[in-house]
Structures are given as structure tokens and as C-alpha cells.
Amino acid sequence: MIGYCGYSCHLCAARSDDPAVRQELVDGWRKLFGLDMYTAENVKCDGCQSDGKLADRQCKARPCARKRGVESCAQCDDFPCGKLKPLVPATFFATKEEYMLCMRQFSSTPNLVRMLAEAGKTPPWLQDYIKAARVSSKK
Image (tube, rainbow, N blue to C red; front, top):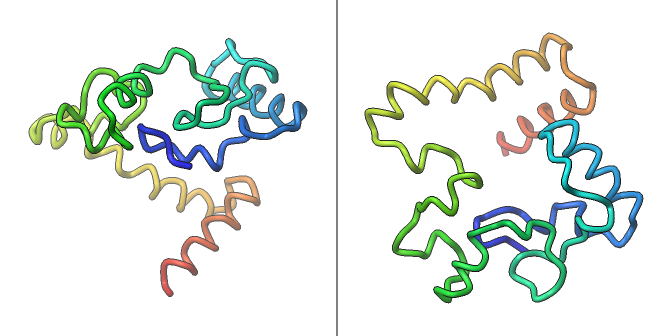
């Protein structure tokens, strides 16, 4: 289950039938992203490519992709467009000059996370996750 915009819907806790799990998701979104419009009831989602319940009723990508008959926004001749701006990395909207001047320095984020994990300054779960990712990338 991949959304039109590329989101990994199958990984999202909004798909859970358990309201307690959805409440934890809502609490996390409030804390991490400041999203306060969601509740355990209205966040229930079957994925944007389904005909079921949707969490993000304000998404502009889904109705557009459906109207154009594409399985993914990546297949659209107008990609990237303003409908996706809040959903995809700004890199898609930048010229080479803008990227080189304004954005490439942010590619350091994975380096910082790795260094913080190595220094023991991240939660243990993140340290374990990074170690596991390193092992799998060496295979």
C-alpha cells in the first residue's frame, strides 16, 4: 500500500483497528509535528488508494491523481506540482543552483544522527536501528 504521493501507507498506525494505537499516533503527531486536528476516531485510514476511510481529507494529491488516472504522482506529466509541495522534499522544486546554495548542506542530517547514536546521545531504540541498518547495508 503506497499512496499516490509515495507515502508508505502500510506502515502507518492510522490503519490500525485499535483506537488506543491510533490515539498514540495522534499524540505523537501532535508532539512531533503540531498536528492537532486529528483524533483517534478521525485519523482511521484505509489508505488513499482505497475507497475507504481517509485521514487526510485536505490532501490535494489524491483527488488529482484519481482524476488523471495515475497510480502515482511520479507518473504525472506535471510532477512536481504545488499539490505535492507539502508532501515531498523541497529538492523536487529546486533548481540545481538553489539546491547547491540552499539545500545540500541538509544532507548532513543522517550523519548527525549516526554520530549522536555512536556517542550514546540518542534513545537506545535509535542506536539499535542504526546498527541494524549498517549491518543490512553491508550485505
